[in-house]
Image (cartoon, rainbow, N blue to C red; front, top):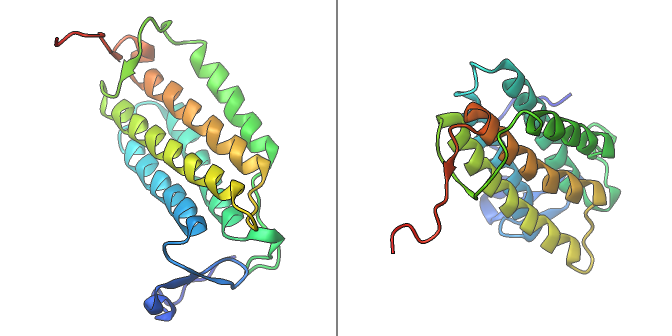
Amino acid sequence: MVVLNRIYTRTGDDGTTALGGGERRHKYDLRIAAYGSVDELNAVIGVARLHTGADPDIDAILARIQNDLFDLGADLSTPHKAKGPGGERLAIVDAQTERLEREIDRLNAELEPLRSFVLPGGEAAAAYLHLARTVARRAERLIVELADRPGESVSAAVRKYVNRLSDLLFVASRYCNDKGARDVLWVPGQNR
């Protein structure tokens, strides 16, 4: 259980922040940027959820993802199997990615077939889910770069989860656009 009695600690005033195991890193460190982007993604999904009230299924999917993203942030903030404040290391597991895959397949089965690339837009929920997808892709790029750095570690489960998540956000955006019927399609060369 996390207890936050005090919001400011002043320990970051020197430009560093603590990882889950207590190690301090510069706030511009790649690991901090990676889980900071995951936090940003969670916030964008929160905004998208303001517009998904008409579809409780999509809202429930997004609520589960928001919780998963805290797990993912905890996983990234405790490298080298360091223990978190509660004494155990919280990590993304394959079952979370498998759940995303089942949800992608279920939602995608109800969508109009794609005949062009989709432009971000349509319903507000769809537009925000497209924004979330782009933030997920940025987080993924940072996570993959971090995983490739000597001395750093990122689990395969984290990399798979964030890759699959952007796919789910794409499918969910189309689902929110009247199951693809209201997608805004790219028309190549339309404005030449």
